[in-house]
Image (cartoon, rainbow, N blue to C red):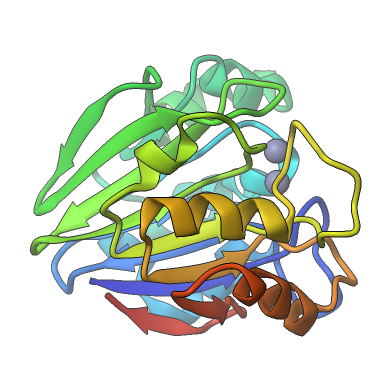
Length: 246
Ligand SMILES: [Zn+2]
Ligand SMILES: [Zn+2]
């Protein structure tokens, strides 16, 4: 599988960057995890949007889905696809998206096939098997595990540390992990600090962690250094348009 990083900023896009978005491809199947602001622009550098098989939204915080509105216009006026594009996400996703443009409800329903899924679900998209788990975040948030060709990428979405997280991520070949805060931040129920990441990734025996979802302005090298202090695996900093092989 190939993981293409499309956006790595938490909350708002840092200068020259984008909010959350990741393209996962095995050559034949292409899915998008999250569609934050700036992601649609970067996505077009890497693929024809008509080849996209499905979009998976982790939750309805704006930094994870706002470019769905740009996607609407791209599909409606330029691509004009014959079939709706599948969009998966937590309960309430469709209502939240349409609430900004209620006059276009029918347009959204024609362009997108919304699938609201529970926190313990398995979905098959061609060769990909995607399973969900519940993150610790203030609103319904899904973590996604994507499996293909015997390999698996685990995306934490936004989450605070919780008991059981290490069991959930165990066995992942690549852990795409939110790294909102440095160790010096106060403990958070909503996001991870570098020391939280090191602790559960080490306990889970993960060999490869890719850090993303940095608060704008965060010294990313410092984040990497802090995770490496108590984690024996490989630590990579995600940057926009990086392509990683799994
Ligand atoms: Zn976020
Ligand atoms: Zn969030």
